[in-house]
Image 1: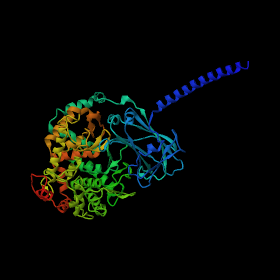
Image 2 (image 1 turned 90 degrees about the vertical axis):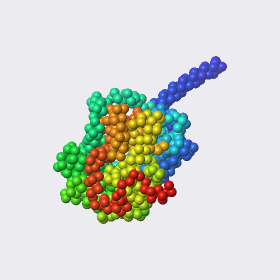
Image 3 (image 1 turned 30 degrees about the horizontal axis):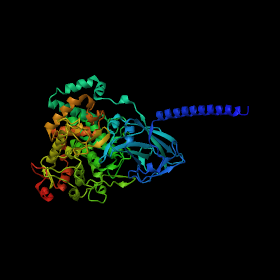
Image 4 (image 1 turned 180 degrees about the vertical axis):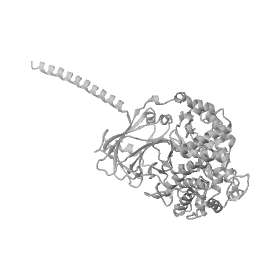
Length: 632
């Protein structure tokens, strides 16, 4: 009996052990299934070894491991902001097997703990990505719209399908998480108190969202396809007229009629871009002369707009205005800067429409706004002008010290009758050159185009260049660059060209005709707006874009903001400054109206004189004097 009891107990213990193993197996299976549902962690933030691979992307933030606040694993990452940067960032390397895990995902989830006792926790959550395999190339980024609360949050980012298409196994990437505090007007201000991250995982996204070109075409309404077919039957003059009218419609319709503020882009939640307002003001004379609006309607819109700015309805300082402002209140938004170039574009538009209505209140307000700009102050004690100023950090360190679109800004600054910038700044601009032309190092086409929207420099030169001939050569190079690469990038097919700042598969980027600064993305406005410079190339590009991609890149306001056949990405949005560039350069090609109005202004003539421009017909781009100075 006594011997039998241990045997029965042994059998019982064995049975209990087996049952325990089964239970553990079931629990493990359930846990495994739960892990599968939750996705796979790419970064756990559990070890010093891992967090030493992170960096703060020059925002001054510090990182520590914490074992007291965590939601998974053994530790979390304590992020300690510097308090001196508008954004606090964590940059994480993505390489090896992690790249494939990322590419097979679609949804990125970041565990974030916001201490309830903090006075200000992050309100902005941004995820960006760059390819760092060789150099640095932006892939894309997006904001999370997750509703946050004190304590633990799962911040979700549903990656656009094209961002997944652009990730290639074997390459190395950097993932950037950016955080900022918001004030009541959605302006950023520096974080000062710690918060915590505990792991980043990926989940499988909806594969049905990844569409081929054929599937995308199936979604296009029949009326759009029919319209594109009709457009291809029009004469060159008729086609250009339709493209111009659609661009005008954006600048006339995407406006708050109560204050004249113009949307930066064609999204209902878009803020106003003060540069887009400048383009829209310049568009008013075009609309009147073409019979698209009445003179009375154009005058009233111009008056409303200029009154808004002159009366303090748009936030600014020393005559400069913030880059982005709220469409209704005119208050600064997106933490933007007082922008010297965007203010210049606005003033160019104001002076243009003021010249069209001489002797009126519109003309008086345009003059008043121009004379209020303190260009001398924006020099910020340097030889060249600062790109901007913020109340948090003062003047931006970046300056208008290289050859680019800033040429227009300086002409306005030199000609100011009240607060002129010193003309010596003109000679402080760096102008790299070949024997043929002065170039912008990244070869972003809009930098050549923008000054010529308003400045008629066809038969003028300074001691450095004939900038009209210079822009012609830049446009030709832009075309030739894509032509040479037509076998390597699906979008470049010989006739289609236009590398410039635009929307792309990964977001807005300053594309250009240089190695490493393009990915197959075309900006339709770039070749179309080159019509006065290279009419044949511009028209051929316009027709080729319609023929090959028309229904995918044509809509309410004409050509959309960008496309890339390499990744089957076709924007459905429009950008105000792009539409303005199309309209105004087409009008200059057809009638010279914008040039004529702007160049009539005495202050503009004074600015050109201060910069050393003289009337001269020449067939060169770079002057012999400057070539000799450079040693050619």
